[in-house]
Length: 253
Image 1 (cartoon, helix red, strand yellow):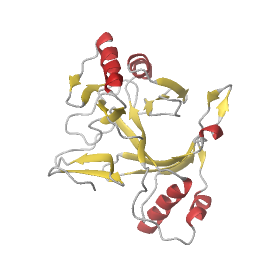
Image 2 (image 1 turned 120 degrees about the vertical axis):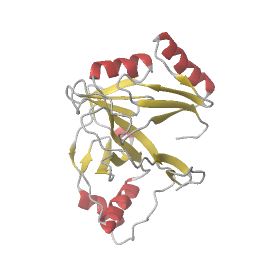
Image 3 (image 1 turned 45 degrees about the vertical axis):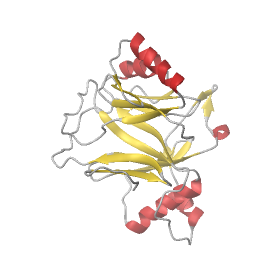
């Protein structure tokens, strides 16, 4: 837990770097069949760090909802008590990422959990995430994949990295495998969640300088996408009502 939280909220992080802010609403309810968060994904620096997370889960009796080898990464999946999806993963070196015809070729195969635990065999698991842990990506439910693609690629300027069948798309910057995942697994035309639903309020995209923020703002104006100017950035919603905040930050991630 990091300092500076307001009553009814808490910020969680690793080595002083914020990753997730939780805001309490005692009247909130879980809603299915809507757009919003599929999962947020915490990226740990090394395979050994991921093994420590798995060992910690085993020691605390924390139940996983899945585990997978995606070629580019190895990932553990679980849900919090309000059914918000969580991924914790580690990346393989970029030179080892699978490709077909020069294009990224992520896949989903079983992850050998016993082999992963061998990385920390006989060691007590650390109760904290290591320095260098960041929020690697966010994966969203959207109402229409073509609409989401136009918004994230043509308007915001992300690069399409890979499609996963007819219902999922992964976009990114800087050649990373994905910073935002988009899917229609809650159904084509899924509505936004009601205001009293649990789930995602917004996710934060950090930009390196004011010039980068100005370029985003210009693209939004040209596309006639409404946004709200903030002291340190801007706020908007994608076509599926998922909240996005852009902010200039000197933090290296």
